[in-house]
Length: 295
Image 1 (cartoon, helix red, strand yellow):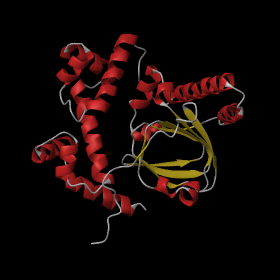
Image 2: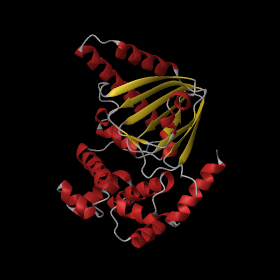
Image 3: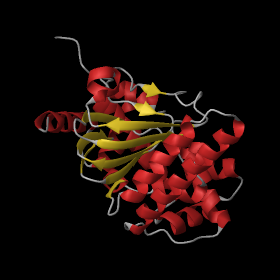
């Protein structure tokens, strides 16, 4: 057999904002820059920061986790830290890409962005002029290197653009209600902890202990805010990472189960099938056949 095109691990691009005051702005010129100048971006990978893309015009296509996202004309799209993504077509797209550290995103906006499906992470932009002007102004501010004050102004304006995008996403069907800060903070802390510890902590009670609340209170708050109990989000995180590893690596099921904190790979296969209605290997086969068909 020839060498597999799938890596053993999904590459993580991290530390790329360390020298950029917490954010980096890039102009999308309408050429397929990713394939010509940066072949490494062609591979499926993760980033350790948020990415927000304003496509002013043109056409682009990429994979976000397991969904193919196609953008034609003016759109906004965001990619969460840790989401696996892969560019496939970007020849004609023009606009801006804003990579920004997660610390720039407050709890309310984080809840908005994190509670949408991949299909809901891209929305059309009805009026492009205001975003064109905003990104151009941010570019001008970023180019000024006259001292700390200029950097603070640029960072603050980057946050303004995030707020502008959040407002537009809110208008496109986000059903979140205004909620008190304590339940919101607890839910966000819980989901952040799940993201960090899902390989080791598998029950709501263990998370409740870490968060210094009762398991019943945690479950009640999480369900009231998200519509799903705490156990759902734990399982979702485990299944999401399992599917990423199945799709984008050649690790066998036993190794994937071990990586996710399961010593018994047969047990892992059972819970995967119960959740996804398909075995892990069948899921991998179906995804790769579908991916090849759409290329």
